[in-house]
Length: 169
Image 1 (cartoon, rainbow, N blue to C red):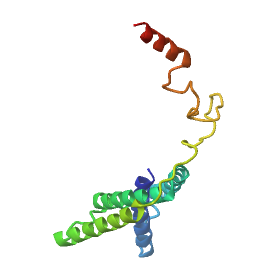
Image 2: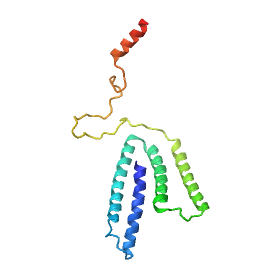
Image 3: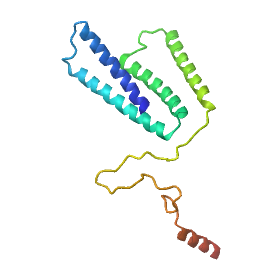
Image 4: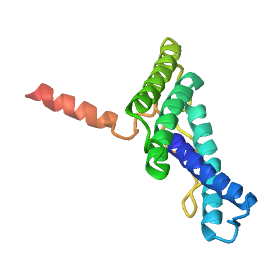
């Protein structure tokens, strides 16, 4: 999510900066509602991008989050640029190939740097989102892993009844 929002941020920043540049050159863009829509998209996507990235960093190690975020952000920003701004329109095939080859080399470098890192997992396998409105308050979203009566487990009484019925057969 953070990477997709980052690509939206890139697209909206490019739109807002283009409109500001046009306004400075004399073609006033502040009178059009699309400027304010893109400004709102830029600000909100920045805020939500940082929130999602912070949540990922709380759950996983930075050596796992940052490479994945980099690859997905770069890929989604390139795709968004191709779709919205037709970045490769009129470019020679060799230039497009060299650009994509450079991206692949960059991704390979990130993979090689992050591949031998020690994986660390969070002690808490969830993010506490606080209380849900109009619902009774609970401390956790997911049940305790050590709790026998957790989701998908069979109670102790049912286990003993099943094993006794199998022994009787």
